Image 1: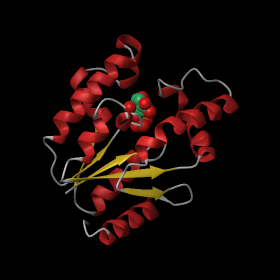
Image 2 (image 1 turned 90 degrees about the vertical axis):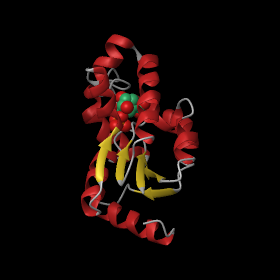
Image 3 (image 1 turned 120 degrees about the vertical axis):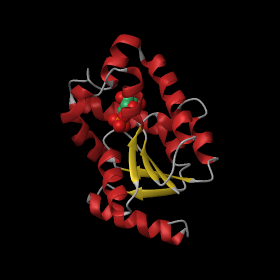
Image 4 (image 1 turned 60 degrees about the vertical axis):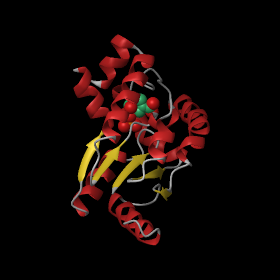
Length: 178
Ligand code: S3P
């Protein structure tokens, strides 16, 4: 069985993915790292030199390849992955994978991302916190539709990574797939 983590930038996908994988003795893979390895460029470099459309195509190809070769793994997606092409359908129809949405409130995301925005191509040029908040609000409104099709949603805003992992284990037991 595989766990696929989705959620907005800054929702803690990588950190929680690693912790969950360690707890359950699973492998942990990160889609952005795989794209970066395949392209020989960092994600910001791909955006800068090749553009977002190129990145989205690379993301689709890398996801397809990865879903065909996934076993006992926690896969962390990029914030936009479920929202482009047929990515969400591919994930949902994979009988060996469960999609999990790590849901974080707007204020928490804004605070976290404001300090990290320089490494993130989509928000790096936003200088004011209020502008960032407006951007995330609108973006989340568009993306929520996709994220909310996950089999499991975990409210993460007031939970530590350890508590998110425990909650996820419980949810999986309840759905009899953990
Ligand atoms: C993106 C999120 C990033 C990365 C890329 C685009 C997005 O991943 O895939 O910069 O569209 O939200 P993280 O969510 O891991 O930051």
